[in-house]
Each structure stands twice: as structure tokens, then as C-alpha cells.
Image (cartoon, rainbow, N blue to C red; front, side, top):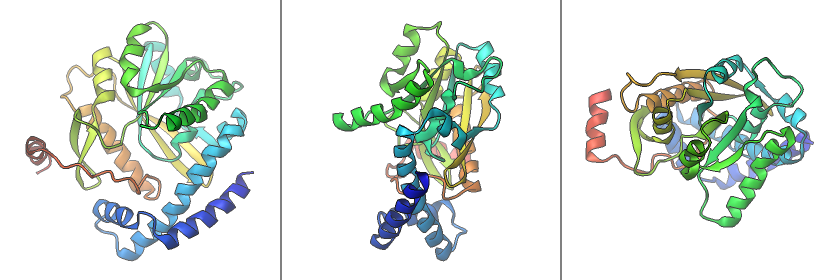
Length: 293
């Protein structure tokens, strides 16, 4: 079934490439992020990105009806033992990831119910946090789409709107859970400035705030696209004890890890998003200059 979907993806990508969907946004993002690239190289990445973009859509639709075992066969985990060990020490874990690989297949983290390790972290509740879209119909659709993995794996976690996370955690402090934040979108007023892909960039402070407030481990979740329809997840512990770390350290470390993964596979990120549409305030620009010169 995926082969048919990839054929459709090829057709859609070719059409969109001719139309030039968000061509200027993609080209500007790529040229600023990788100033060493020539225009021919940017053009090639853009063309590959269109195919990648439609692959994400068709894979997400495929995952709704595919078995959990098939989904897990497409998404492998490199070092799940790290989360297993942390799950023994902590009731809850904060995981941060970007729009990398195919985040819509992150439900594979709930496992297939067959290959279970000792102290397997997927036996605990897994929650995918998200920012609710303005449209109620869109909100209902994305919730429905993302809840399928939890129903198939019988994991008692689910999808939680980001504004309710703290309340959810505090309400049930004793229950074990892993909370996944897709944290590379343009933030609101609460933000941290860092150097990301060669330019001043602002990131959400929410995951760091929660990790500090509740004294939870902060883990980077990387998702690499190994091949078409094949993904590999890896975990990297950024910090367990944040008490001696300056504010913003965790968020900047997340941005650095995400940048390293993007550099390894330049097509593998959401380039059509207007990520740098907001300008720094005077204070943020001053801080940025102090940090990065």
C-alpha cells in the first residue's frame, strides 16, 4: 500500500514543484541556513523536499489504518535503554523533538506489545503534546488521527494540548509518563533566543520551564529519515539535574542537537514553514550579541 502512496507522492511533488509552492520561503530559509550552498544545490534540496513533504502526508494517512506492528517495523529505536534507565529513576520524563523525520509516526514509541525489554519505558503512559489549531474541526481531526497509535498499542497515554500540561502533571504526580514536545515552532511571548542554523532564532521555553519546575530529566529525541518510509529514533540526555544550569541552557542545547541532525540530512526538516517571521526585541538582540558576538 505504501508503494502506491509513494507513486501518488511523486506526482503531487512534481506538480507542486512546477507551481512553486512557497518557493521563495523555502529558498530563503535554505540560503540563510546554509550560506555555503550554491543555487543549484538549493534547487535540488527544494525539489527533494517537496517529495519528502508529500511522503509525510501519505505516511501519516497510511499509519491510521496500518497495524501497530507494521508502524513499529518502519520506525526503529537506536538506544531505548536510556529511557528505560531514566524511567526507573523518575516518574516522568520530558522529551523534546523538532519537525524532523516524520513526527506523525512518533506513536511507534508506544511499542508493538510484543518486543518488551526489562523496565521498558513504553509500558508507561506516553503523551504527545501539541498546540491546538484555531479550527475546532482541524483540532478534532488531528486528535483522532494521532490517537490511533495509542488505541492500537493500548497505551493509556494520548494527546494533550500544551496549555494543560502542567495541570495534567500536577494532578497526578505519582503516575509514570513520558511527555513528548515538538518544540521548534515560532514561539509566543515566552521564549529563548539562540543561534540556530546560522541566524538568531527564538524557541519555546515551555519544556524547559516544566523540566526545571518539576525536576524532571530533559531528553532530546532525534528522528532521522534513513530511507523512504524508514525512520530511526535516537535519544540523548541533555540534563537530569538543572539546578546549576543557567536559564535557557536546556532550550539552547535542544536547538543545537536539532541543528546537528538537520545538517546531517538537510531535506529532513519543515523548510516551507515561516520559522523566522518574528524579529528580536532590543533586549533579545543585545543578549544574542553577548552570547554569539
